[in-house]
Image 1: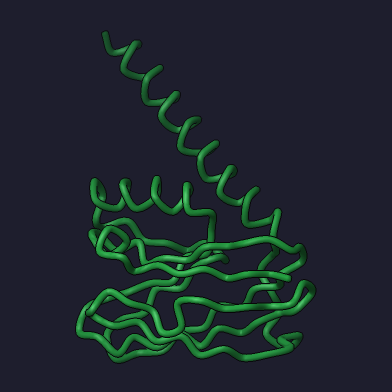
Image 2 (image 1 turned 120 degrees about the vertical axis):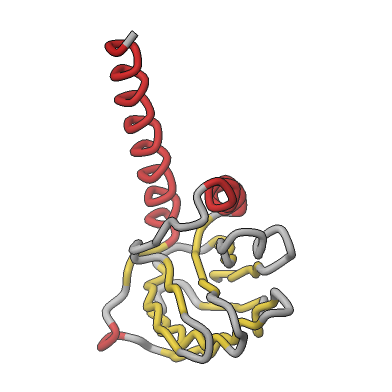
Length: 150
């Protein structure tokens, strides 16, 4: 029985590892972590306790490196995570199960109440990229947006 448990544990790691690399593959399909010194534009994003981003819809040119200055004007922690809507939905469900999960990925920024964070992303290909707050319940409450890369 213990051996079977070990195998299951190992499988769990493989699955979560493959899930993370799938997310990174999608993010890599549209862009990569950017160098702040190469940012061509700064865009301000506000996150609030009404579970909304301002702006929730953005248009960016392919090849631009954007520095997102992300402000949390609320009283609870929020985050901005870039990815496909399918990946964000999966990740949001995980966050409900494991609310203490911390994110350290280059495609996201977590911001404490009243603070400001930065996310720098280079948009290398045209397409649509989604973003959302994956704090438990926030995605489900509609805290998400879209970036059109043209």
